[in-house]
Image (tube, rainbow, N blue to C red; front, side):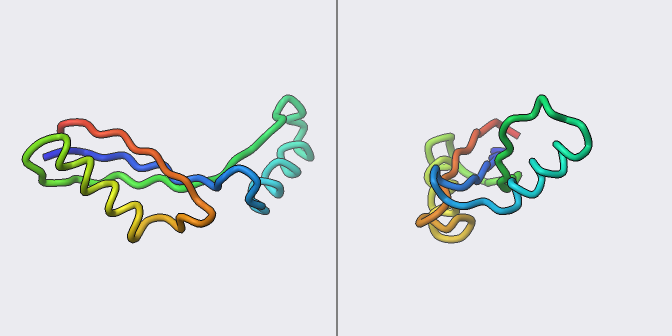
Length: 82
């Protein structure tokens, strides 16, 4: 059993209006030291796989087929033994 942590974020150049709104609010609240905000999603999955390379293949397939929109999003993940 493996725990997979998936991080999904917008590709460079893709408009992210939520991060703009967060950055503006941070500035309004006086957090002027914040210069950039990026939003994304995080998933934690438990995968029953025979080995780490099998878990990696399953995680890649999940990201490509379901969890991301590959046109506008990138992803990365880390795998740990559960």
